[in-house]
Amino acid sequence: MERYDRLYALYDEFDAETLRAYQDFVDLFPPVDSRVALEYWEQAGEELTERKEDIAAAFPEGETFAELAAHATREQAFTALDLYNAYERGVNVLVLDVDETLRSAGQTDNEIPRETLHYLTEFHEAGVPIVICTGQTLENVKGFLIQGLGNELVHSGDVSIVYEAGTGVFTPGHGPDTKRLLYEDLDDEVTDVFDTVRSRVLPDAPESIRRGCHLQGNEFNVTLKPNYETGSEEAETVIDEAMVYVLNLLAEAVPGADAEHTRAYYADADPEIDRVLEDEGEGIDPDAIDVPDAVEGVLDRIDVAYYEADAAEIASRELNKVVGVESALEVLGVDDPFALVMGDSKSDLRVMEWVAENDAGLAAAPEHASGRVLDHVRGEDDLVFDAGAADDVLRTAFALNRLAEL
Image 1 (spheres, rainbow, N blue to C red):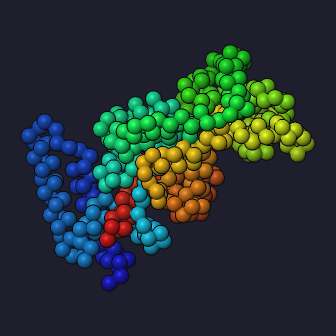
Image 2: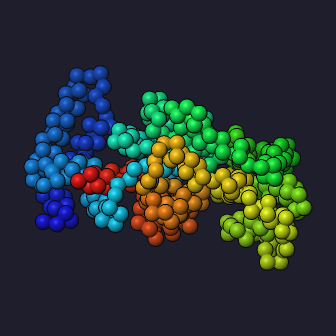
Image 3: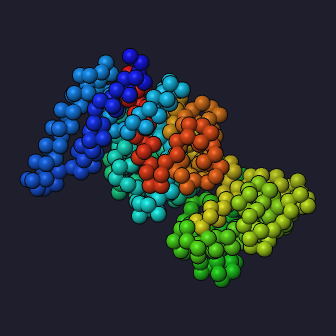
């Protein structure tokens, strides 16, 4: 019988839904200090074991199929088998964005759900390194990771944090390579611009931006965040205004540039920035502006990013998430990566494109990700998940790895 046929039989002949319910209960709700609760938990564990043994006795891949049914839905299991037939290998590293990927402000109270944390622990115990790849500051990320996963796991030597979208990499337990400050390798042409913008971005800002935004505590990038709930109408209004202000300030920091140069350059590069300029009454025709070569040479090295109702940011193009991930993989000793990359924004898209170009992994995104990210993910393996449900894809990857072990 072909493996697809046996997988059909698994989900047709056994009550996989109830089996998963028992598995989730045993995994996610450990017994508390209560005799009744402990007895119920032990009974669930015994029932889980019996049901798995029944499956194990019915198929040549018995133990693996029992794990598939206990952790993955029918759709997830068949997706995993399709992925295995396409790539013939399992995932050997996770590369994960945090905000609006692992956690979602609108769905999970901005906390990483228990199910997602559990599967991260499952991959860790299976020896799969985890790279957290985020635009957030290092201290923020360390805080919620330790709270969610525990200090021992985060400091195990198999977890790396690419922070500020690639300006630094923190991998506890690796001696002199524990913290790599990648921005220290940049030359004065770029660092002088960042120093100027950073020193002026709040003191010189219009009152509406000073009152409505704060400067994220980055080591290198300059990021304005709203003093309102992310995604709210107030946040969108102030971040749109801040985007125009950042472009004007950047023009003053780059020798020989003016506001028309920066607006034309970044409007041509990013349709979202072009739209914001139009909405703010600052629209410009990039084709009508001649940006001097010397100015363009500097702007080519500086990334301006707009995140709707979330942030206006300048960063180095030479220090992006791809550079950070490559550095993290080097420290972790992952020489032949086949990564599961999960993210929602254009900075994550670069990592997704990198793994696609190098046949080095899979890409997954939440349904509310940016249009370009969704286009890429759907054009690859269509691993799109609901907001707050990152564990759906992690379950699929779990199933893929079980199949790859056969």
